[in-house]
Length: 564
Image (cartoon, rainbow, N blue to C red; front, side):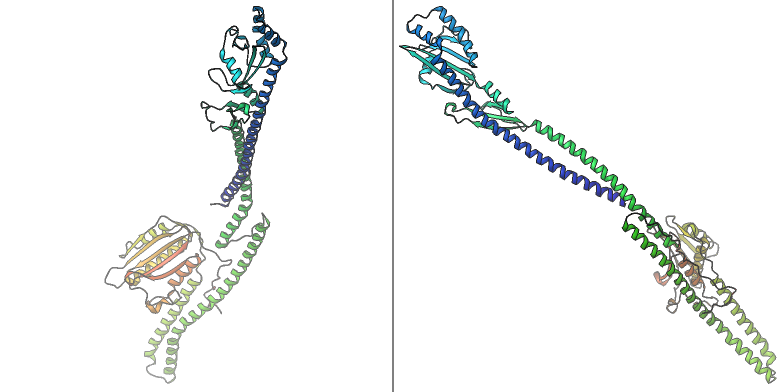
């Protein structure tokens, strides 16, 4: 996962979580405040209902008692009843007057009747005058002046009040009622709630409503229970609007955070990519300083990186010089040792010739031919040693280019197809590396030829297998396996040293040249024993090519021996 993607995810999650926590925290607080406001509104409605109903009861009772006590038409009608002189005109006038009084008193029902139950006027039933209702007279005597009348056969639920006036043996009564549905509707509008009389038929509140039951404790209104209901749909609509705003704010915050993360990632990633690129150039031997850009930490890092590159270049130069001197000393020692060996028989032959000549020995002529042959052979050997050393010392630096390892192995193995030996190749997945093709062919040729030489003389036919295999994405391994007896124990410690050989006609520089080529390519070569004790040489090369030193090793010129 790239740094830009990590920053994008981190900033996005942080912005989303922060906005969500703040937004939904505010939403929850606002919701609780709104619900508390609903509760307060219901409680206020409860108090209002109690006060308004008590006021309604008092107002209706006072108004009706005032009619019975002080109204002129009540007195006149009562006098005419007592004298038994009430006329038809009076009855007609009363039937028209009572509806007007009902409206003046803001009542829904108003009935004027005699003590015998005869209805003289009705405010809500024009056909009632002239009829008799004995229950009115009995209610006037038995029921209280004010009461709550539930909804039933007599009509709607209402606040009912009664009053009467008596003269002699005649009684005149008034019954007034104000329906509760209109009263509760008016009170509910004032407090922003819906009020209804609680009964068995009242449906329970649903999930979108808040309700409160009001028990009217006034003695005049015993049994009256009112349910106050307020809808939560406005709250839910406002909550949905708040949720939309929170989501919108979260989207904007996440977008801003993403943009900031991208800008920050670019400002950080570009210097890091430059540092990574130059780190790869360090491996390939071509490092360059990087520009100090970005924050203070990146600038400090870039300066430290540039200083490390400078120190590394200086260290490599010193290391190259030290290795160059050590290599010359070691090669000079080996060459001197190899040349010293043939000098001994040359010296012995010359000294013998001088002695024979000094004493005029007759065997001088006979020994002369043998001595000169020995001297010439040893001089030829010295010449060969110097020639091989010159070839080893002048081995050119590799010139890497894209090379298909499988193709190089197949073409090299094909050179031995007609030689009578069994040389086969097991190739891999077509890996391509940066290498010097000619030097890679030289390595394979040397290792294959060594394997064939080691297996020659055995009962079974010499056989060499070259196998190519990728190791991860940055390395390729080439294994050369023969069916010979393997390397002897006394040769293991100096297997890759120059002039170390157990071949009668070998110079001991083949594996030394192979190792040098491999090392200059940035790889390694190791020897292991295979099944049955055969030899396995395993070469591992980097895909990216050799890591070059700041200055290549300078070979000695002109075939002269290097000096320590």
